[in-house]
Image (cartoon, rainbow, N blue to C red):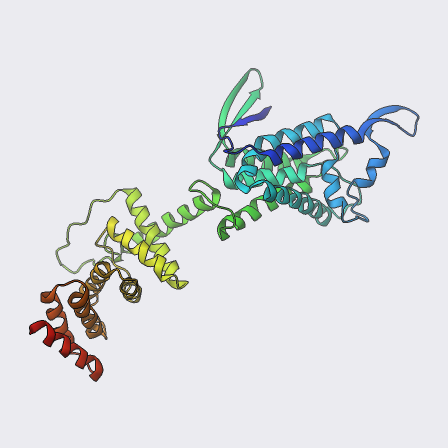
Length: 398
């Protein structure tokens, strides 16, 4: 047998709400569990008769039973197991969500696991226990801290311990083995609400992924959502490279042209992954209209690898954004980069004119200003722009 007894991370703040839920469950158990006289006149320990009214009765449930059932337990092992797992995994989830949000999450887990049990089984037998809510919290822990280590005690012919990542312990042991496989091989005489457990895990994992993806819950580089994004970036990188993408220039590789290739910068795998991540972020930000942040990301990309090239319109949009925000040195560099890689752009004279104005009025470089303005003058068709270009040239040469 194996049993977890600790994790290798500790909450930054005291998880008062989790402690409060554990204490409340224990107090309610003390009040609702005790000696009960059966129909045969024998006395045994069990749920007191008046407390059965607060169990979840699928045949005709009251709304409040979707919460009250989760605070009732049918024995010492029942509440002991649930509260231990709530303590083991709930502390850090409480720390990440905050007290009030954690309380609502716990109650939502209880409601959704109870509802899932009803919908899946269609049964009429009342259920009780915090297992569904605890499963939701455990599922949330899997998403938030998948790489944390769970120390497990095992005893077969001898006793020992070993550490296993939470994603494997929860995913394989708690979900697959203890609920999916056990559900198919369980003794039907033993009533365990596997459907409530699985519904709780599904809610905890699914809802936490959504909260991380939408930014409602602050993520980290080690949560499941971030790991999935990192995997997807690596997958896209491999696919693009295999398809002929050149990660050093950001353009398709020029194969078989007989031209001499330039020496590429020496970048390690971490830098290359960071480059791909920045390019992906820039594309997404431009697509959603967030040019200001996209421009910041572009400058970071240039620091990592100045040979990177964005698609034509994206690079032009970023150059325009940099100019509009008053970052004239950076915008001039972006426009110059644009001219180097897209010299046949249909409105190239507009870019030449902008560069000429930048060098003349903001960067105090008359030599470069004259060069770009004279190039622009040869292609400008708009009379107003042509007049402005000639006036600037005359001012610089006088």
